[in-house]
View 1: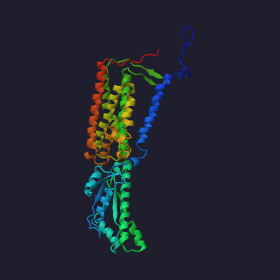
View 2 (view 1 turned 60 degrees about the vertical axis):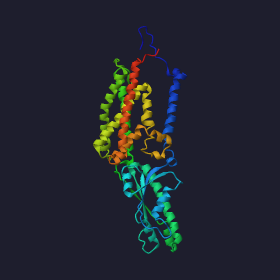
View 3 (view 1 turned 45 degrees about the vertical axis):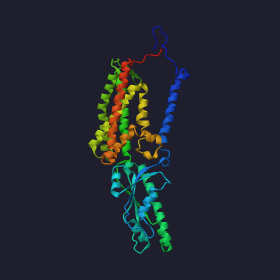
View 4 (view 1 turned 180 degrees about the vertical axis):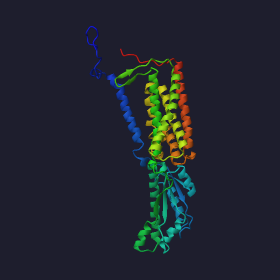
Length: 425
């Protein structure tokens, strides 16, 4: 567009001229590089080698064998096997818990163990019968899985239990072949006499993603709170005239509304509480009604989902109010970047480095996923993690409110007003 004198209007600086300014490159380059490095270390660091990090994975050990000891031995075979398993110091992978069959089932049903190894009643008698004409079937040791604890965790527990049972079978086989008078075919059977059966100790529904729906549903709640909080924050700032609204080639700036930081944060948090109702309802509609995800205790799941997403949303508002322009980046690290690898929802916390286990004590995603898992897979039992999840939601919400309002009240008292951006000279 030309002015009245016929001189073309200035078009501004060219990009090629700005590219030569080192200061323009500095901050984006440093931040992008740090983000790429941190994300790589944090995400991959938790899953590179679960077997190397694995230690004290809770597994139940049930010895129901009450038979008499074999000739020349002081203990029956079930007691010998249980003792050798719990005293084995060659591996630290399992944290064996010696329980009765009923106790083990309660632990499976509450998600406190990842699996169980069960030595049945009459095990010694069935082994002894192999060397006689009374043998009718191979003795069996049962490995119970718990898919509600996640496919990887249940698989690791099954692998550990199966390995222990196989080792026990070979040990028993050496004892039998040393004393039994049998032909070569019978000795081949006696060398590995125990059959290992794998069963589901605590079944979950077929539409449960092999134990992964709890993690992905939790991720949806966190993302709903995180994205919703940021959208609301940006929308309010735009409507109040403290941020520009730019969509494609259209740019608008509304008149600035005189309002302090405390009242602005209150407005954003109230809106977050209201809009989260819609977000959570749509999440449940999509997951449960449309996609058919297995879910029970629907009213409880809805209330819990709302409180979980709201706690995240209020936390996002508090962080944005405290940190300003970098608030979105800070909240992304708090709720997502550090939360995913320390949630224990895909990789058991017993199979991740100590740094992630430390984070799991307070990172929101771990607390929320425990509650979702308890509702979806473990009959909403409090001892399955639901009680702790409710407690941590309350604690997290209180911290978010106190931190957010303490910061904005401090800014208001110090006279730090929210100024509108000024044009570049």
